[in-house]
Image 1 (cartoon, rainbow, N blue to C red):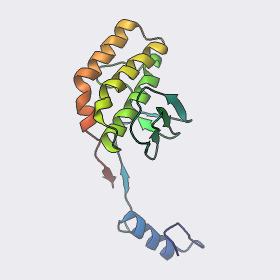
Image 2: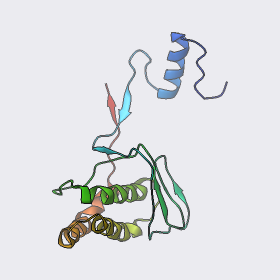
Image 3: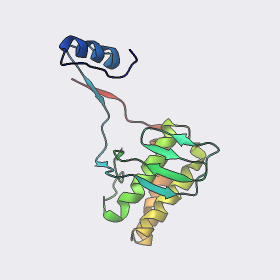
Length: 162
């Protein structure tokens, strides 16, 4: 039997054995692993060509960035939207999606953090495309340039319940 889920009937012993093997928890007290800090979830894939062209294709569960600059953010991706004192407005949501996904690739999947400034510029560009006033888009850009470095270095910890 391979490591896929193959439960042949409603056998509780079989289910408990599988659960213990894959969840690494006591089958009498199952837990979940999760992260806090997300308020939006994508309901369809989003594709965009961006001016970031890494030297190799990067793939994760929800984000991929090809060498030709094609960014794909998959359905189900969760992000926290605009950070800090920023207001969550419609002209900011798409930019925050792309920006958060690029920062996540820097934190977790090997996108060189030398692309951070380009990611910040992309945020400003998308916000302007979506109708944000140029003065506000400049403040958004200045804010991520000033405070964004910590977001590249920090990932939300994995929490468990119960």
